[in-house]
Length: 117
Length: 230
Image 1 (cartoon, rainbow over the protein chains, first blue to last red):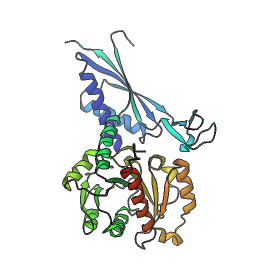
Image 2 (image 1 turned 60 degrees about the vertical axis):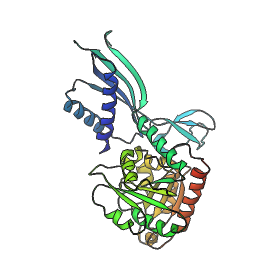
Image 3 (image 1 turned 135 degrees about the vertical axis):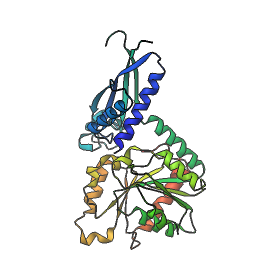
């Protein structure tokens, strides 16, 4: 299950960012999960939460937004949602499209709160 | 958000660093004249058999090496060893290959100067789709015994591939696989896919497959038209 591997990747990134801000701890991690990110969101959440427990950081809240695949048309330059993973422009029916959202897990933001020294 | 909170806005793909690493490796191998092919499929679609047939077809004309990913055993590497330099990448249960494992395999092979480097990924149509291994071509194999409905079921894999190889076509008379349906569905997901039909056992389509490889190397590596993975 590669959700565990990707969750560890995310966990290490947020810890690395937190270390740049001494005297803080992580309260919230906000992510976007695209419908073509290649993961099952529930399994990803479970994997991330088990990591936070293992590391004694179970106070971290994972805020997850699921987002659809959006394509940008290289012909008419408009954007449309790729329903059912059929990749063409809904405006001009063109097939030359580039995915501009929904094919990855995006780390959106991290909330840090101060800790007593 | 209470005022003492600090929000760090990132807005970045969590695999961005891994993708940047893969781009560096892709360029390094491209500069050496090597086309890297990431071969993906479900288990048993015939990846190893296709590579055996490819090695025999290209022998004396082009050099190649293979990195073989499997959860356990080195059986696939043993099958390929009589034909080409090969290193087994055993993942110990992990469902896909990642770039550090590929680099380890290249070191094990002595970082050979070859025309083609094939990475036979772990048999899985889900997880390998998310991991850029520094390949110039991602080729998804679909065997006629797998069923023709797979492009719609595994859209990310087909969307991120450059070619689909339909394998075991000698078995078409015995299975309810519709080649046209499979190719149509695959093209709905990725209109730029090249489609090639092969039977490694019978030697059907191997010439066309190897021509595709040679032309891809000339275009992507020697003329430098490769700018990134899919």
